[in-house]
Image 1 (cartoon, rainbow, N blue to C red):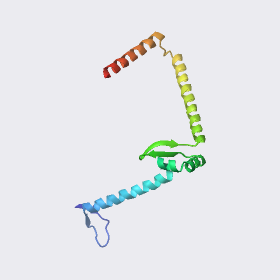
Image 2 (image 1 turned 30 degrees about the horizontal axis):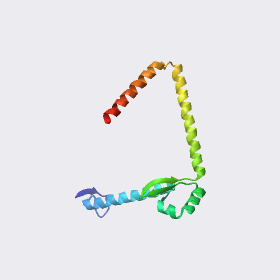
Image 3 (image 1 turned 120 degrees about the horizontal axis):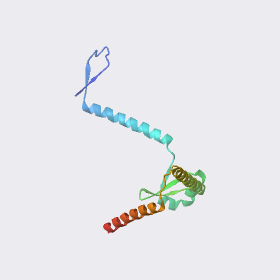
Image 4 (image 1 turned 90 degrees about the vertical axis):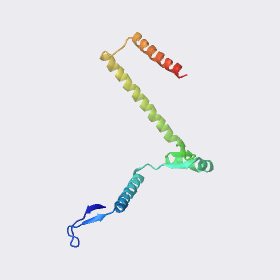
Length: 150
């Protein structure tokens, strides 16, 4: 038995109430369930609506599903044997993703060029023979490891 302090009232002035382990377990389980429900509701409000359908539904209703994807511009996750196998996107969304990836590649290249120019300006350079020696050494050790594995 655990002792739990209770607020004084006129019926039990200053007395402590005995609380059994099972009562504590039930109370903690109720709190956990309430937290889970609140989390689920919060998650439902803020999550992006994702449509997940099995591949058999796609086979049966492909025309309807493709038109929904094109209209809503939201991706559909296709499952096979209960696991995500593919994602169906509208052509417009796919082209936007391709454009974004292209821009990211350009930004990464610009960043690398800026770093190279800054390194050169600060004198952090290597001679060609030093680079060649490092690369040969690196590739020789990786080739030796591959031979050991076989």
